[in-house]
Length: 370
Image (tube, rainbow, N blue to C red; front, side, top):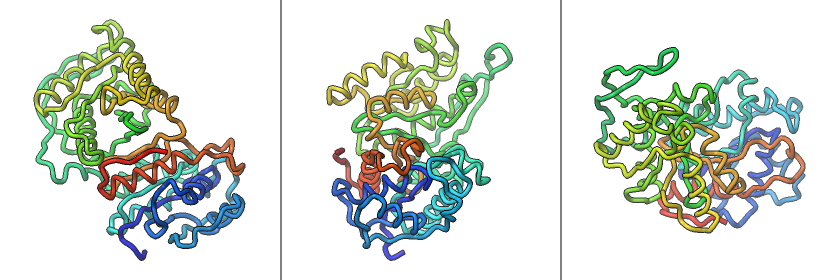
């Protein structure tokens, strides 16, 4: 690699729209980034082949790190073992380069979780791959923060929840990456990421909530230049539990975590709120081009945060992995097999992914969405 200050961009699952949106984004002036600052990590032949099929000029100044891939084993518009292998190897190469100091950001095109598992790599998504190969905890390196304490803790038993007294230390959880979705000033962090809906409640605990929200606070301050960010927490249950009538998780986990965050760590956080009402207010502000009441919204599970974000900004929202040694961004959509190879893919989210990666990694405090 000729430049140690580059943004690495993967092609994602080459049987999906990954190569198409990458090439379209690179041919757009809206990224505002010079080719010399970019390095593609993916199969060179697929990159050139797709560029010619799209009728677009080949950006010759872009450096390409070739990842082997047998084109005969790739089937457009469906997951394949070869596509999964290529996706994983490209992401692994990005991590290796970043660990050696050759990159300031990673932008990943969408992959198929089924494909990488078909190839024998058993991960729930790219966030988990990045944690394994790159490590996490970067936001805490220069911070004198020890997230531990004592107080009420609860253990789930068959038929309910019982109270136990325990002390917890969250230092290991400070080494976890977090998944943050951004659309202009609308931001949501997903507490449990890719967890089955039936297992969400058992994956929530006070220490997990504490660390995830503190990680978000540090990212908002360091990456987005938002001082003393204001944060809202969604309840897990309907009506945020309705004082225990519809569930006890709010009283046993969410409310104690909020209390500790406010009193012990000076985090400006409110909630838990009924998520339907909270998101309705946020959506109203977003659609009116107004700044939302809160700088970020905490969602307890995947669809609680991503349904509103994708309804409002499917074509422009960006998935950001925070608390890594380098920033990682990705479009908020998937491989879109239904339109793969048909030159129909909207590439705006990829443009935004590149812009945010550049903005955060170069220390810019803001960026302008197209």
